[in-house]
Amino acid sequence: MYEDPILRRIVDLMNQYGPKKLRGRWSIGDSLAIPKGLLPHAFVAYDAENISDIAAGELRVNAIVTISVVVDMTREINTPTDRSDAHEQVVEFISAKDTNSYQLKPDSILGALRAHQDLDLARNVYIEVGSETTIEYGVGLEKRGPGIVTAEGVITFQITHDQVKPA
Image 1 (tube, rainbow, N blue to C red):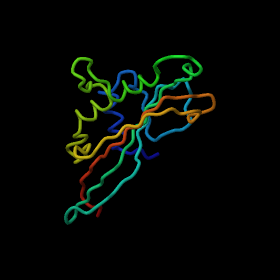
Image 2: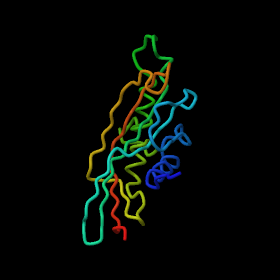
Image 3: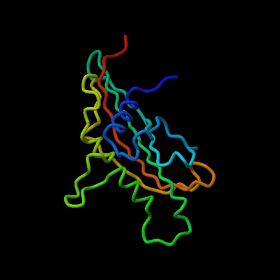
């Protein structure tokens, strides 16, 4: 079965440098059905790809990649609280900040992505510095399966891969 090498590289990067509580909990492709016992979990997938000629014999692939972070929040339903621990855990995984400087922590997903923008320098694969990275947060009401309520965050960013045209 085919496994995309660029998405695999992102998973490997996150397992090495990303949030410790998510290490070993990454999948390629976004699965809607996931057993509650596998949460928290993260998925990396392509959203779109654009291919253009940049020179004679060369292509540039700009790929829009999404990382979805999913945390169980079922225990918070019908519990009065002034904050959502599950939402805070999603924020911590994605964009944890130092409490003194407010700088991204290097082991957050965004910290790891920004620190390793040269995803594969030898093969001209880069996390695009000039593009905007967006994060959307929300709640999944049984989106991942019956009786499962999740806090979720979706990160969208661009990968650039310059390559020789296939012969």
